[in-house]
Image (cartoon, rainbow, N blue to C red; front, side, top):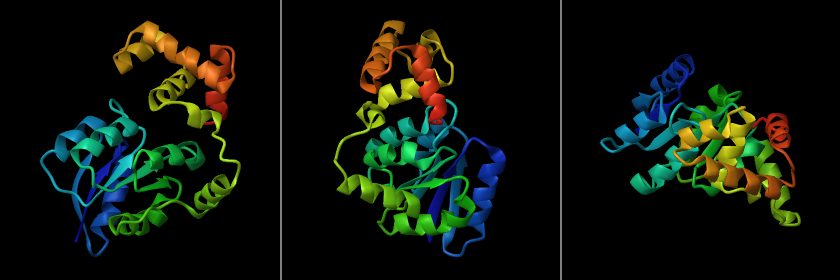
Length: 209
């Protein structure tokens, strides 16, 4: 029996995923959460075979939850759900140790298949993403501008794309305004951009907001 934990902040979406698990032979729904904090709180006192995790949740983000769980449950397969284009997120997340990535656009059709594959020890990505990864592997080997960013720089870029001020970003990440400004300067340099407006435009055009 595969023990599945579902984490998504949208109640209707979460219930839909839970219903799929409840109706699937060989799978058992062992819990659900609507925030990253709830995931980590329950992770300390329960055993799961797989975590299905929404990338964008209030409070601690999916990426922060993934980092925390690497220490708490290093062998736990994590299957990430996202509404964002997979080519913007999947490679970064796979490098951070997740077992699979599925878009919410196709999740209802692929969720059970993806869960079974990652619990068996495999990795799950879409056919399109798998092809892109092969292209990147046999290509020049050069990193894209986004890949040059650290996880924290990447998070700051996304928050800038959401229109948040350096003060607001500092408050949410618990860092000083000066540190946020330093991250912004590094991002501008690595992205070969010049102004905050350029960063906002880039984030919006690439669905990072």
